[in-house]
Length: 82
Image (cartoon, rainbow, N blue to C red; front, side):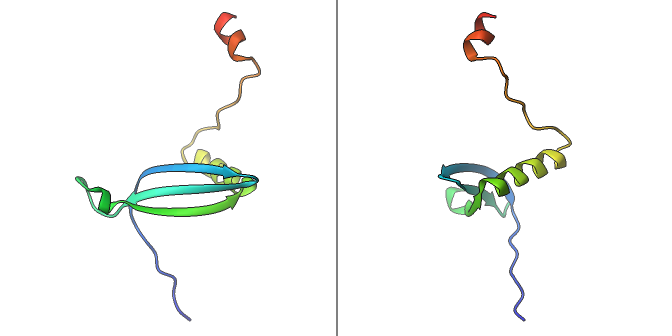
């Protein structure tokens, strides 16, 4: 059985886009210490559904020993003008 290759690197950036009920996560990493050039940055693209994205987000919050931010029930105007 063929083994799966593994990549190692330090995360240097990420972004995401939402299309319907899917989330596309773009993770940028480098495999060498700074200074590095644009050519050293590798981008991995992952497609997941919203449930998977939420599970990943919750996992990362737990790993960081923090909680997810809560949305305020108050509108922006109420927050600004009390």
